Image (cartoon, rainbow, N blue to C red):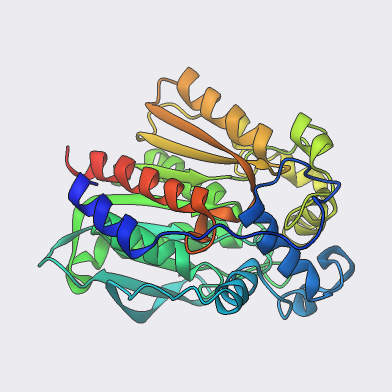
Length: 346
């Protein structure tokens, strides 16, 4: 992102200082004020804990994105005008179709670089709407066409369905680039949480199957290990919006049983990571997945991959899409975009 871009973005989106009404939560005494306003709002809905629900019921609950939208309303924070157009596409996969939302920059002519983006939600909950702010930000700040993919989820569709759907979507993007004003030679992958896991798997599968590799992978607090006794799992076992019981629930719903979590497609830290593209890993401090994200970055480096790792203090899992209300999210998006653009401009 050049400085003129950056200052325009700064001016259009200054994030006001928000003050929480209550004390810091026990699970994060060092949480940033703006971040706490969002987690307090999410708690205020009084939804039952996700791990006590069926997947179908959990999908109907409030999301961190709902909390952000309500915080914006309550504080008269305007939504910045969208700098991209969207359209829906159905992508054929084995045994059905999945839906993708294509974000195309309004400025510039194309063909644009492309980013295939995978949302989070533990392979069980959440959808394209929940992660719309992240996909839109990547399109706007990189000048790329973003293909945001909704894969089939557990428990209805067990592992490795989401992984296979994600790979089918990556292949679809390569084959259909011309139809969506994308450059098929300049494709990156990106994802958050379970989607960060999928993005890294796409690079591994492309390498192993001998098809075109992504030029970059952006992994935002990725699921990367089956170790639920790591340092951050201990420290942030009760964090919000992601805690240890939820991760166990996700594993049960998508994998069926925890023994499958040892599969290197889930425990990426045990996968062969050689020959993968330049990688940006973004971590959140107040997150059970913090330890494994850093470990994955280290293992990628050990495998000879060009890696940039950045940890954001005082923020929780899911912060990345909250740029309208959380200053660190704005910074993380700008950082991610600049790293992606370096790979696009090579």
